[in-house]
Each structure stands twice: as structure tokens, then as C-alpha cells.
Image (cartoon, rainbow, N blue to C red; front, side):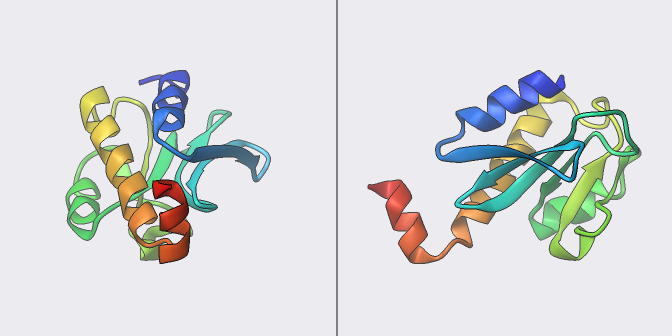
Length: 115
């Protein structure tokens, strides 16, 4: 997937917002909490996202996927390039990241999204 395709997919998930942070990153959030971060300029990592514990353990064993700097303790994985996983799997992983973060939001915030 390209960065534009990732952006289009993430922005299609309900209540997703995006911000540019840390000078060179595009951050996708639900309820003010990050679920994915994409590099806007070439860097060591192309995209990082929140994972389930099982996905985290599986992904970090693969070439091109590493524990995300600064966020690995919170079960985040960084992909070194767009070829590390195929498009269908990346969409699934981004959807899981979104759902995982959404599920941990306060009940009041979750209720706002249901209304």
C-alpha cells in the first residue's frame, strides 16, 4: 500500500482523526488516542501501529517488522517498508489497531461514537 492508500483506509474508519506530529509523521487517532503512525518522509520505519499481543509476537518474528521505537512496551509494531506485509493483511492489522484502541477508551467516549 502507498501512504495515500493507508491514509484513505484509516480515514474511512468511523471517527478517525489525523494530525501531523513530530515534524514528519501522520498520526491516526480514535477518541484522541493513537492507533497508527505513518512516516511522511523517508525514515527507518514506514508505519507503526498498535497490535494485539498475539499479532505483536507474530509480526516481530518476520523480516521487515520490528518492535516500534518508544512504543513497543505498549504492543506497537513498526514496518520498515511497504513490502513487509501485503495490502490485505495491513488493512486487517490497521482495523485491529483501531478496534483495540477504541475498546480501551472510556465508556463515555465510546458511547459518543455509538450515538
